[in-house]
Length: 312
Image 1 (tube, rainbow, N blue to C red):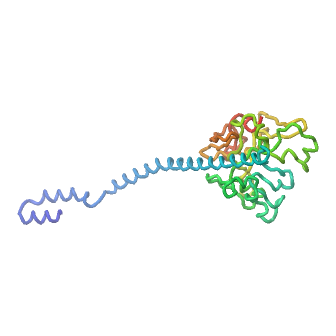
Image 2 (image 1 turned 180 degrees about the vertical axis):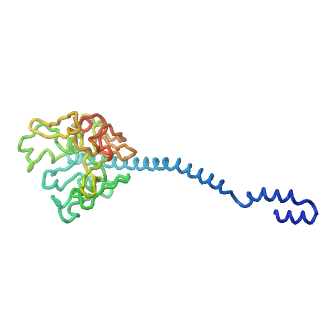
Image 3 (image 1 turned 180 degrees about the horizontal axis):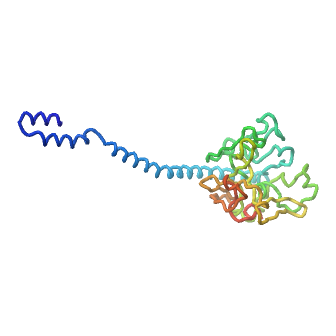
């Protein structure tokens, strides 16, 4: 257009300086942006990305937490169905855990070996043989969708792999540790009647305030790889409980050394998902932990006591 204007000006004999100046002023707009303008645009785009990405990450994390809650509800329904078919007794968490290296049976599956076998396949629980398999979609526990770097290769207790990253209230619901009528014979390791059946559903005094399943993980240490997490199938209470002939015993001491090793994993935006005995589910924030376990997202919610895991 400027070339044509110059040509017309030359032909008409009119002065061309004004047209030339106009062409120079308008040439930048016709040819593109200056370097400064491009830098400004890039800076604005970078700022917008910095603002949007955290929100996008949070939204994705929240959607994964919702899917996780759905998985916990399926576990609650499966355990409730198990109780309906088994004299109103919840599924045992680990009926033979005192045998060998930890027994062959868990609430989420059955394994072939009762010790650490050189064949990893024998150390891994088969979910299709688990007591809840008939009540779960395709017989398997759904895995929590939140990405957790569980280490399984070469780990002695990697056979806990298969619980989906969820832990069962072994102390209060998956055993009879709180029962008071045991004899010394009942409590022997080769008998262990207190571990063979779950708790009676009708004997849970406060279903809305008693934990059934939560998000879990277990912290391990290796001299070469340092600390790492494995799957763990029990959500442990703050204080260890023992079955005795005099009834259940535990000590709720004030120091960290009195606490059990925490296994509840606060992996959903610093919260752990929980399903309670009455069927309602929610997310809980960590209220206390032991030592440096909090750096790994491990701790407990609620009061510094066993009351949320206690069937009474």
